[in-house]
Length: 233
Image 1 (tube, rainbow, N blue to C red):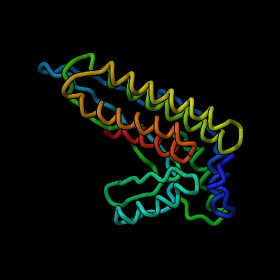
Image 2: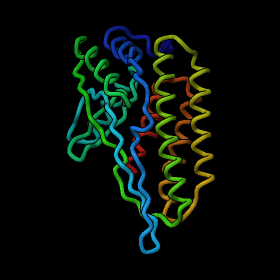
Image 3: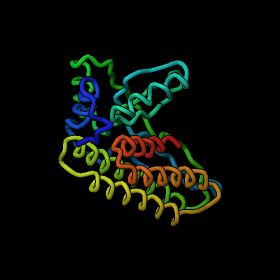
Image 4: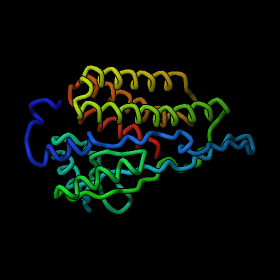
């Protein structure tokens, strides 16, 4: 169960119980869509199709600082508190789901309990990248697929922890292992045109490792979501 710092009743419990009760419909890896690699004029071009995600939003704001303030209250209640900008407004997210049914179930539970929750559709990773070699194309594909696999595993573990079905030690091991996988992929990848993406992945891996040592499930949830949002590059 949650530590005593998350032991408040009322809305805190509603959010925790709703996140714990997600259906975990499962990830279909082919939903990550295809990667199309084209060699043109000596350039290696990678076309990445979007990945559809579904987030539970607890509020939206015109100003980023207002969203950041509200995100802290969501974080304290056990949600990720990630701030997502769609180009117009800043949304504060409790969780991101790869299955629409999971998100719909949580939103329904929260709304019926008096929360102002809504589903936010997010498309990740629709991108055209020009790389310098076929090995960079392969590395990018591996990183994107690993990020999705990592997120699904952590999502299932955080839900299990919320529901009292595993210890934080179990969750910590999963998060630590996930960060190591990302570090390994970064180490095995290279190339000047690819360096900015690698730097972002390393930063996320470091955040994920720190979260694994925190004994705070909200930190793991937030770091895992940030990894997934990386697919927007």
